[in-house]
Amino acid sequence: MGALSMGFLKPSAPEFDTAAWPALPYPERLRLMCHTWAMQGFGAPLIAYGFYVVKLVLFVGGFVVFARFTDGVDSLGGIGAWWARPQVFAKAVLWCLVYEAMGLGCGSGPLTGRYSPPVTAGRAFLRVGGVRLPPWPRLPLTGGSRRNALDVALYGALLALTLRALLAGDPLAGRWIVSPIIVVMVLAGLRDRTVFLAGRSEHYLLAAFVLLFPSQLFAGEQAVQAGLWFWAATSKLNHHFPNVIAVMLSNNPFFRSRRLRRWLYRDFPDDLRGSRWAAWVAHGATVLEYAAPLVLVFAPSGPVRVAALVAIVAFHTIILTSFPLGVPLEWNLFFIYSALVLFGAHGDVRIWHLSNPVLITVLVICLVAIPAYGNVRPDRVSFLPAMRYYAGNWAIGTWLMRPGCLDRIEDTLRCAAATPAHQLEGLGDDTDVPQALGRGQAFRAMHLHGRALAALVPLGASGMLDDSAYPDPTAQLAPDELEVLDGEMVAGMVLGWNFGDGHLHDERFLEILQEACGFAPGDVRAVMIEGQALGSPTMAWRIVDAASGTVASGNLVAADLLDHQPWEANGLALHAEA
Image (cartoon, rainbow, N blue to C red; front, top):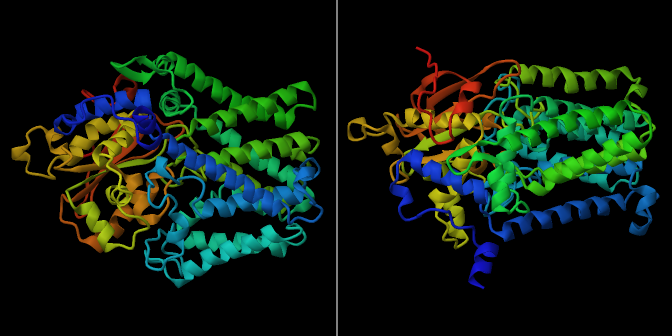
């Protein structure tokens, strides 16, 4: 009973001496936690995965309920006659848009550090006084960093207008049904990029725009789907992705064999770089993500096209059941549904049937121009509209804080959630918070660009405490001296939503916290690494102090990280700028 309850209700215990762990040097703590990740992943209890299963059931159930309001949909028993109708597909798109915008999809629940409450976006977006991040604050009516009545009204209008469309008998009956949703989301996004990104607008808002052209709906939606696949595959053409496979499968609750998990790494526990087997899986997935969509788009109907459809459905099913930490579960489920609708039930429609110049222009801008620019300038475009999806190559940030600074943020700002420690305390959970956050640090460090943190985090800590008392910078990183946590955790508690976008906790975000909290120099620092641009060998890094600004910056060669373990960076060239 004890062993069963520990696995079901409690997280897995780390595979090291937890009493001695806090006193160990930072590299050693990180090494032990990386070993634990390799065998346990996040170590979440089974009940945590149950939360996501229930959420998936509610997601599908919500879609079915709204589909029943569609004209001509009489009963669930007749689903074979209506599941692929254009009106029903339109409702699937709109349901996904509002579901994600409410924070119910990506970036929710315990696997993203949200324990109580497990969903925070909707609450944050409906509260006056919270922090917002306008993408271009110099535009008229977009300046400022606090949510006001206008922001709440725009978000409330988004929910109401989408609900109206979902309850309509025919959401394609007139552009007046869908077009207000698009306008409101764009306006809300100009005032707060968090809302825009939370709705996964690079996908669902674009798909909603296609709904304005019912006669070319399926051709347009095929273009959207194919564009997403193409750029997702392209983003994996780097040194990063083999390590993503190893880290992701280590967190798969169905991939429990320790022997198989060892195969993911070159020589567990001494060498935790992705193995040749993990690399083959990564390359195979990339080839499939290129090849299957090409077949679906260009091949004639027949066995080859059916095989491609089966392969792409299996591909997204594997991702779905791997429970990646950002938990884009509903997104992958929609990919499966849309693939079956667009290239299965309506496979006779082709992308080249598009003829409307307005629709074609918007699709080219959103599916070609923006992703292309975002791939060569990842510092200027979020990885979501750049469609640089789960390829292990995003902007990241690790924050260093003196004790009490995170609590000051919670007390000063109108945050969407409490600190992770206070969330767990509120649940009566006795989980060791530094160890729980340590798993997140191991997750980050085991990705290729995360290995640079082994050098950059001690560099960032230098000067935050009395250096004469700590000649070894790593000694300053004891949990009771400096709190080390991923920027995602800070963004999540303040903004109410985060999903792997380091730009949500960049210098602008740090400035907003500084304006409110008035930190002293050395109180809070962020170590930031930008994503690697397509065709560039380097990644930019910087260390920013909340009070005094940039402390150090430079560039590192991504290929150099291939020779390093996640916990050591001896000899790594940081190429610091003078």
